[in-house]
Image (cartoon, rainbow, N blue to C red):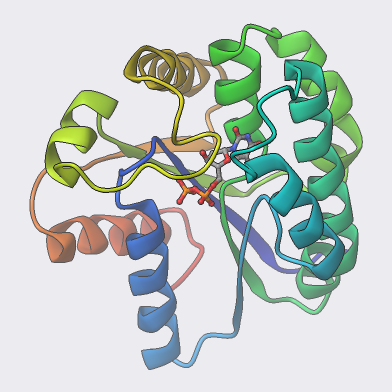
Length: 208
Ligand code: TYD
């Protein structure tokens, strides 16, 4: 029986997602709440090895299906090895990216379609359906403006702005399909956005 809570975080490149996940983890530390912080792709030794292959900028010949299957492979390993055991112990699991990244990036932006991507991730999703997904809502245009020339290094970051616009529009469509996904508008300071996240988790009964 799964007793914990599985919270996933989504957003486009440069949305400030990882900073916000870290701020939330620090908040939970201060409040003595037991949690596990993890990320995708990766999060466990085998999954981290798969991550390296996926993000390696020299793997320019990787086809879209191979990319989607590698994300799915990394995911199921991570779920079975790390996420499920933590949930069974009653912990809160904070996961930086999960299946919605595959639906938005591979399903919408690469054009593989929702059915194909949902299909190859079916097992992971059945085993671990998020209790809440926080979507950091900022357009890639605005995110790139804020980043202001920061390095775009890995294979996914190197995709052009058009690709990231498709990712964003994919996320917007997912918001209409899955009630578990809640958008947090990313205007304001880091602290203000953090406060919105904490409020959301309280509203959803994840934390007191
Ligand atoms: P990462 O450096 O972790 O990016 P970020 O800080 O933006 O989360 O790299 C993960 C990259 O992989 C990111 O570009 C999003 C992409 N991705 C997918 O395309 N599909 C997926 O299923 C997942 C989990 C990530």
